[in-house]
Length: 189
Length: 244
Image 1 (tube, rainbow over the protein chains, first blue to last red):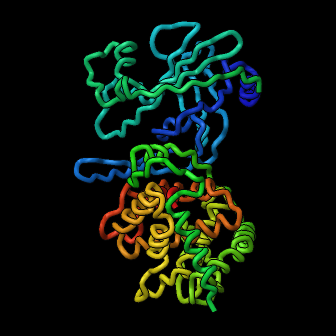
Image 2 (cartoon, chains in turn cyan, brown; image 1 turned 180 degrees about the vertical axis):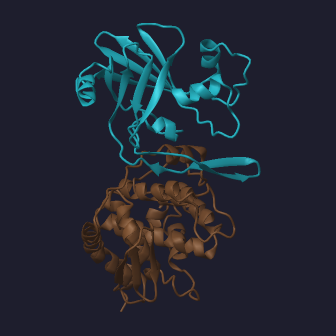
Image 3 (cartoon, rainbow over the protein chains, first blue to last red; image 1 turned 30 degrees about the vertical axis):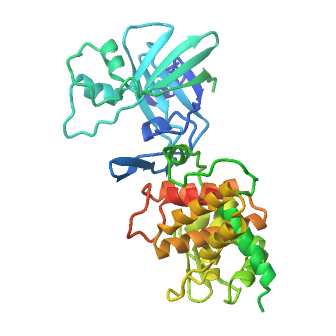
């Protein structure tokens, strides 16, 4: 009986929206682990070596290879509300859970990584490594979806959140923020 | 017996390559040989391809193919520039290290990790030819001074002094290399010999350059070398490679 229920449940449409997105073009600079999940790259940097001579500093970024780089990644909404999404990692495999934030808009969704949102909402900064993840902005246009992959900025925080009093200087400044664009198509598989 | 005119030809070839005039950039302002922000940006944004996984037999096959291709050119250059025996004993060592080294009078050892750590054949060829370059330059015997690099800079200045721009370029690279310590000059000399071997073997130099950038990005290289370093820094090697 239970097995039957499990088998039948698989035929229920758990994924209201299933998209296959192309890895986004980029200029090769500042590709950190969290961005490598979405960008066209065979690797990422996680540290830099800074060399200074008489106050003039230069940096060389290291390069770590992705375990299994793919040319696309998957984005699927979980449940019918399209409030929770799972996003595959095109660099190292695996999935991350994203949730829609901000006002409900059928044409546009702003998705942020769930763990990061939880930490910010509850102001959990101590003893847990905080890893900013890019924000995904998904817009529907005719039969395709445009996806913007953006650094998380203070501006976005103030726009989308109630707790504006929290110090967000840790995040990328609006001037230095990077945006990458790609397109997604309905994944019928 | 050393064929003197041919030796002069190779020194002149090394010299001409060393000052970056192979494309005939006559009239251009002389280059400022410094690791610039632009070069660092290019290195930091370079699209490195993930190395191809190769089995031990595939690794051995690739290494043999590289050696077969570069050996005639390496031997020809060795006979002109070196008094040592131009035959090298090659050894493949099992290990994940991205490394190779020259030892003894004619021995070169390669780790299998080196073959598995590259994408293009040219990257591997550059390392193999670099190690051969250490033997050609007689670098293992530390008591002997390095003469080839000095000769090529000197020859460059002597041959091309009619053209002030070219002479200035030669002086720039000479002055730039002059800053390095003895061991770092040996590395530059091995890189120079390696580049000539690869050029004569018909390899794609852009792909060989990718190997130097890979070494820079995966080896946690500083932007510039300090006094006690045994090797020039990654960006310095790329800069010199571009100007050879």
